[in-house]
Length: 396
Image 1 (tube, rainbow, N blue to C red):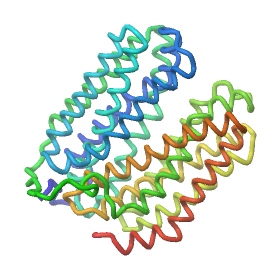
Image 2 (image 1 turned 30 degrees about the vertical axis):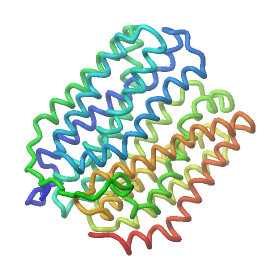
Image 3 (image 1 turned 45 degrees about the vertical axis):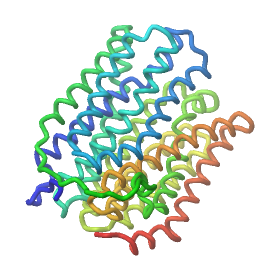
């Protein structure tokens, strides 16, 4: 039996630890995000295409490692896997400080994606383990707040510190310190022993991917695709076509506000068992947000769409995560989590690549309409088939 509280207390000590460690993980990652393109350009003289290549390596390794990390979390002691992954995530921040060339930085950045991808899977799986079963869906919703809060505040903090000090090294040290705090917090976890699965079957695809969740995963790919297009190209679109020169930070702040508000509101609905309804409502709201972004080329729509997309995704994402967990036996929670995140990452990556190609050969408007069409198609598929598939196949 996994470590689940015998009481109905949601914010138990172990859950608070995993929540805090996840906040530290995402803070350490996001505090660097807005500064890395500038750092690569100023420090190594990297061109735009080189910057894109260096930064994409991180996403690639994170994507590749997720299915394997789900397998590891399900096959070995979860705390040991979590601490090993988190330690690698922490120590690789030191590589940014010692990288002496663009190639060295590229290698460190690419390697860093692997423990990031594995740590997000293992940390969220442990968080689900320590939640009381009666409040698991609600807890999943609140767990995402740690991501959203980190995303909302860390880029601004990083930019302010750089403005005050003018030194990138200070930001790298801050990121490493935050990751170190998260590692120490997770080291204090007190988990009950979980009997390992004595599964002697030959390795097969369903040991790495939750095949039963294929329809939910397909919808998640389309939602990630839409987000990948918008989030990557909104800054240059805003600057070149709307005259918004410093609005990216406000866009993400409004997006995070929407995510936080909808998670707070939706948590109660998830606790009452309205999983499919939350997913449906969030997906439909997101469709409206992406439509507004694609159809109305005005600053007010640029910012309003951020809030609407945040409200939609904040309802949709925890509901889909709950569906994946409810489709899997307890022995495959890690696989369920990794499948969800793999589907999202795959969609984001495809959105970045195809969005850039369409913007280059057609226009940004065409790329944003493509993002909306993908989002609408994924929502239509979920409404027509995915909801019924979940209700038929869920285990709890």
